[in-house]
Length: 197
Image 1 (tube, one colour):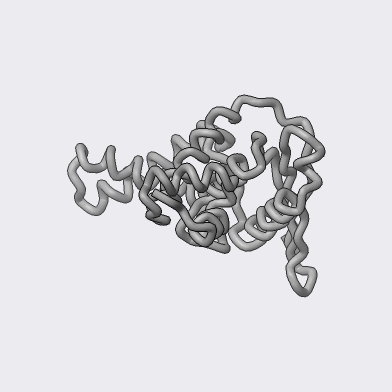
Image 2: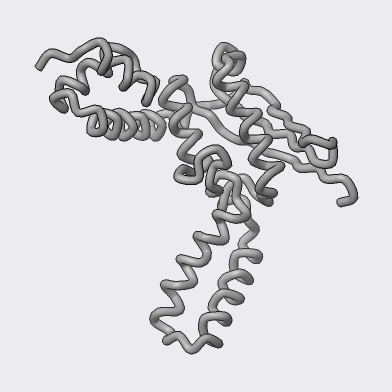
């Protein structure tokens, strides 16, 4: 099937993939933009997984001061090379993450950082709430895991919904940028300041 330049442009705008890759996927999907977008996103996630173990020794400190100078955040966002760290996309990502920290007040970068005793206590609290509501024990265990995932979405930066697009998490945004920029990207740490706290 012959693919038009307009179709390639549309797919590139949606995915930031290369021209040749867009043309190839459009040919595979007979010009179906939605299917092509899904395939490219899936391939991007695969690329991100392959890059996950690569060392990140460069990066930037993203910052954001909320209007009125009452709240601010700093986020260390690391990548593999200073070339990528200086790109506008990477710098905008760092700023967006700092804005996310100001807006959503996460406590941890990821669930791995939550101390084991905090997780254990939260499981006990969630289980007790469900038992007091009269739920059977076999349902309590599964429900606790589900509610624990919701808790992670509240307190862990990577699990939170992105403030610019509630349908994706910060982790999804990072994976999209890993695929787009071709390097591993890691949120190393963050700090949030608020006047009076």
